[in-house]
Length: 355
Image (cartoon, rainbow, N blue to C red; front, side):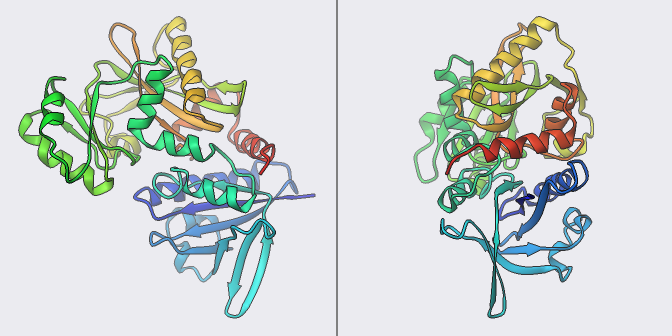
């Protein structure tokens, strides 16, 4: 009997466009890479305004963001009523219920990666791929994630937290003692949105203002020397596979949005150009962080490796980029898992959850 999987894409988030590409890859992986007849797919698109639709058109239209204009959309919503356990679709006065066995949320950033969709799935009583409400919300908040990491014994950058409407004088004075460059970030945003690398004191005020456009909580962090490394985690409980470690080499600047998705000067080395001992240290730290941040299913853990080989936590992505060329599936591919196998395993893990 086929298992019905609802793939959610889009969303009221700055990372809407990235979600479309990730979801398209997952849909192709489920429809082409898994055994025939194993899954029945339901595609659910959410517009930038937060409107929900069941989508029945071609996958390419998701990827190029023409899905909503394609004539293949009908209004739909995931019901929070546990007796429904599925999607409500209506066309005029006609309503149809589509039972759903597993929700696969490919929603990056706000209103998707932050525990909101996960909470809806919990109310609906439908198993879902990825971290739970707590792990998702904790991982999304850079300040909270760093506090949990530090409590678990993992080094984090020195930082201060700011809220709008407060007197920031003391916090800014503390931040200046970290030295430059500093990084000003929205606490709850992904894909480097709203982040500024501050190299001079006069840049601080505008950087904080930019961060507040994305979130009502801003973080100022010290710059960490060295380079960024990452690892992919897949599993649950004590059974967690850590993929191969990668390394991001930057020729200039920092890993902003354009570098993350355009690779203007960045080069990703897989495996990372480090010794086997350091590689294992990074993997072990990733495993500690996956557990400390209450993660489940999958996550990409980003860290810094300093010149004196200290591993410093940067951030965790509980719904990482998921195209076939994204870092997360590439790291698992290097560990022996093909893209379709990763997608299949994630659905298996979700199915084990009891709601």
